[in-house]
Amino acid sequence: MRSLQLLFRASPATLLLVLCLHLGANKAQENTRRIIIQNFEIPTTVNRDQEVTATLQVRTELKECMVAKAYLVSGVPVEGAFNYKYTRCLCDNYPNTYYWDFHTNRTVRIAAVVDIIRELGICPNDAAVTPISKNRFYTIKTLVVA
Image: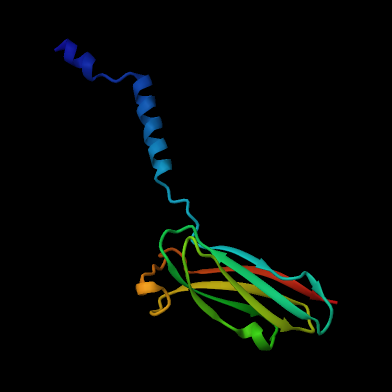
């Protein structure tokens, strides 16, 4: 009986090893892939009535494709191509780049917004996923008109 008690008795070193292995296994199982990665570029300063080109590159680290709608938002009304909305299929190996050309006479804060939506006929075979945790991503920049 004594030999069985020694066999099943865990030493502190063994318990520490099991704890470290358990914590390491949990860390390895975390999902660290980013849903949306945005690179929004506009000039910081422009002259009055100068044409501005805004560029938004969107990519994902997910293995599945998603339907992404990209558009610009501002607190100040801006006319023309600024109001265009693009809807495309976004996949891991194929980043999307969007362009907007517009004019403004006032300093504006512009948000580049990407919504992950459910829409048929965009991705091949309608094979697309929608994230559960978050489906709207945005980046804000200021355009100063001199």
